[in-house]
Image 1 (cartoon, rainbow, N blue to C red):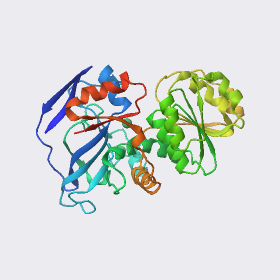
Image 2 (image 1 turned 180 degrees about the vertical axis):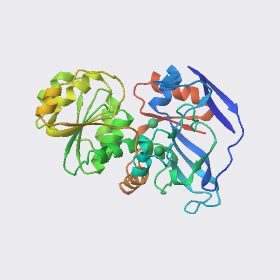
Image 3 (image 1 turned 90 degrees about the vertical axis):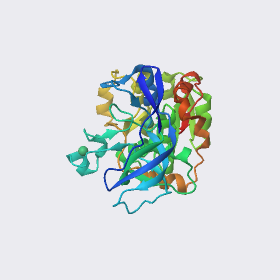
Image 4 (image 1 turned 30 degrees about the vertical axis):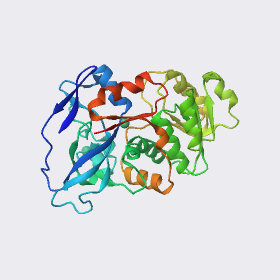
Length: 339
Ligand SMILES: [Zn+2]
Ligand SMILES: [Zn+2]
């Protein structure tokens, strides 16, 4: 099969390699149909590393994927050849205390696609354990199914802080994860507001049901607090931008919750005194656990049209262009690779 390898910073090579084979009875051979390009893929492509994860050997990127089943292992019962599936990209150890508690996103031994040295899905076939594959309903396309992965982050955030119907939430930074976190809050019954400067993103936010978006091309970040009628129950900070992070404390009401989702700046000035006096709960979140079934059901039942999220599509041999497109096109939301 063909696979796109990141050889070193800024260098992608299409190589012919052997097809993967089923080794365990519970595994499934999946033909990859669609892969979303994530910010982390672009980061590895540009920098050759994310923090302590360094690309030392050629690595296949891509982790937001869907496909069709070509072969199933002997003990696989609930999936069959020809089923269309969403692919959850992280396989945890299943043995540690986090795995036992169902918080497997915190497992130290997770094997996550496109995180060195684990290969991802910019290739034609993968072999995957059957319980990390989820059957897709007719009304979710392969391309739309790639959004289940970033959508899962939003669902996990809503679960973690126990978001309740009718609560008012503000999402700062409306990239794909910000938009999809807003969508997941909305589908949980919350009233969703946003902060963003890009026109295209604001347009999509309004289409998927955001109540109002503060446009930071028109209003200073520091001024937002003076333009909020009633403070928010919950803030999802998705930008990773220090100016926005520092302001979150001024947008949330007493007793409210702030979740830091976006990765960017690592150190910020934060008003801890206000945090204490206002009894604010703060949480980070990392990936997700047990979200795929809920994500598929929410998207399918609510018939959310996700086509607006997909800005451009590329074939496997053009992975390099796919990784560069979002850098050159600030209006781009999601790029898709179809192997
Ligand atoms: Zn991703
Ligand atoms: Zn584990």
